[in-house]
Every structure is written in C-alpha cells, then in structure tokens.
Length: 216
Image 1 (cartoon, rainbow, N blue to C red):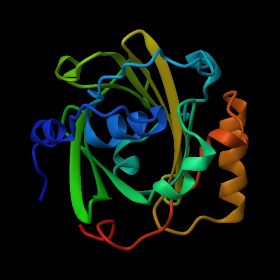
Image 2: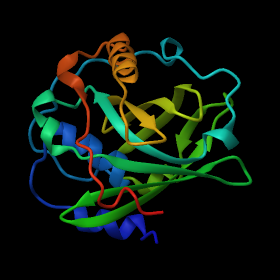
Image 3: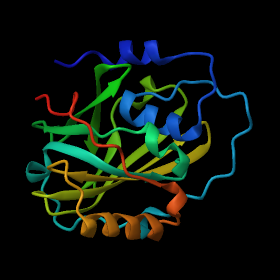
C-alpha cells in the first residue's frame, strides 16, 4: 500500500516558494521540508517550552495505535485564510516491538492518494517521541512529538515542534477516531491552541472528504 517516502519527497521538490503554512504541512505529511525559500524567514510566535505543554499521564502506546482522522490543525506557520486549502487526512500509528511507531499519513494530492511514512522513536518520557532517521530530512535539526491529551477511543491532541535551519516551528493536531468534529472537541482544541500562544488566525479545521481517507 505505502510508497517510499524518499521517492515521494523527491517529486515534491521544486523551485517555487511556498507559504510557510504549506511548508509545515508538507513536512509533516510528506516526510521532508526541502523547498528552498529565498525570502527572509518571517517572525513567528515562539514555541512554548516543553514543560508548559501537557503530557498524557500514564501513556499507553498500545491503545494509542491505530487510525486517526485529522480534524483540526493549528500552528505558528498556519494562516486562517488558507482554511479552504486543507482537506481532512488520516494518520495511522503502527506500534513496533521496540515501542516505536511506524506512522503513515494518507492525503489527497492532485486527485491521487499519497502515502507518507516516518518513524517516531520513544523518548525517556512515555508519550513523547523523536523523529527517526532525522539525518535524511534536509535542514531539520530536531523534531519532537508529544501526546498532550487523549482518551484513546475518541480523540487525541498531539503537539509537534521542529527546528528547521535554525527556525523553530510548532503545531498541534486534533485527532478523532471518526470524521465527526463535535462542538465540545472543537472548543477544547481552540482553547488548547490558544494556551500555546496561538490565535484564531492560526487555527484551521480541514475540509471533510471521503476520498483516500477511508482506505485501509
């Protein structure tokens, strides 16, 4: 089912300058942030210290694995006006014997279903992970994933922070086991994003679709 992420990333390269929000999404979903930007880096909202980001108590990696629908995203490189450009996608966590995850995201791009694969390696803190084989991702100096809140069966809020060419980016995603976004979870996610220093202008709710995201 999955295709090699390095070959997909090569096809993603191009000389055009992309908006930072799309750069961030491209890295998260496509496995690499390799587009060259000629413009000076804009001033971004600083990432919060990790000790200010909640960590799910007594994290259970076996219960967290499986398929999640991405129903909300927010980050310091996202812009509200890009709302219509983002469609719902899925991310599946497959637990390995060493307690790392094979992570596969499936998204619709150019009317095709693209699969993007990476590995999340557990840290000394249960529920926090580092990107595996980071040297293959050009310009990426660090990449941390932190499960902030989850009930395993219905929702999860996950925090991501990366340093790319000395520029720090952060984002958070709202996962659901189904496509439905309830008003309560929507408000919970908005509140969490704002606790990180983000504003309404940095919060996006992807457009629901059926294509690609329903495949196993």
